[in-house]
Image (cartoon, rainbow, N blue to C red):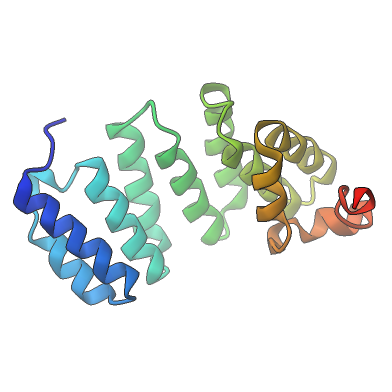
Length: 170
């Protein structure tokens, strides 16, 4: 993939800046200045995903996640984003089914196993959720503990287990 040129990079940086300031409209305007042939660039797609996520347009986020997988098949990012969007659209089983194969490719990415745990918890497959959470913890225990502390998607698991398993350790 051809890299972004200087002016395209400036537009992308400006879009990210506007998004960081909470101005989705200006972020969209900056992204629209990037030529059509560069709209499929992974960095551009990523910012578009965040713009649509801000407005909770999960259908657009799903499409962008799928494009990211096509453009960068050796990156976990698109897999995670696509399934997150599906989950937000209440298509949690589909989110699980489409993210599950990514674990075979990216076993060093804790977020994949963690999200699979969340999806299983929401699907009331609590033992499976516990197993996925354990896999995520083996990759990055500290990150998982931080993420899980206030994640409502895991609430069914905590209720099933009588609390977070590491609470007894502390």
